Length: 149
Image 1 (tube, rainbow, N blue to C red):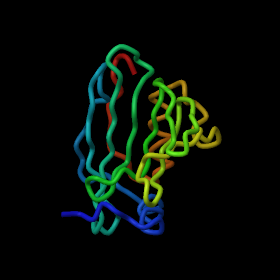
Image 2: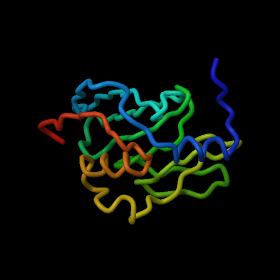
Image 3: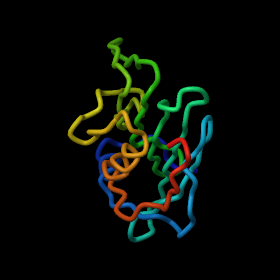
C-alpha cells in the first residue's frame, strides 16, 4: 500500500517532477457531470501519477482538475465555478482556488489562483492546458475537446 503521508520535500519533488502521458490513448473531455482519470508517469517510469478532470452537472463552468501522485495523494487541485473553501485556520478562500499539498494537511489548504499561471480561468478548456503546465506535464495526454467545452 502506498505511503499517503509525504514530507513537504517529497510532495514538492513530485509536483516539480516532469510528467508524461502513460500511453497514446485519446480521451474525451468530460461532458456535464462527467469525469475522467488519465494515467501519467515520470519520464523514467518510476513514479506514477493521475490527472483527474471532472465537470459540474448543471454549471458548465464548474469543475475540478487534480494531479495525484502514488495513486491517492492529491498533489495539486484546481477548483473552479464552485463555492468558497474554508481553510483549517478558519479563513475562507473564494473560488476559483488552488489546493497544493501541505505536509500534515494534505489538500485541505487552498490559496487564491495565481493569475500569472492561470490567465484564462473563466475558460475551462484553456485552464486545463494551464493546469497541466503548472503540474509540469511536459508530454500531455491527447484530450478531445467536447461540444460544450
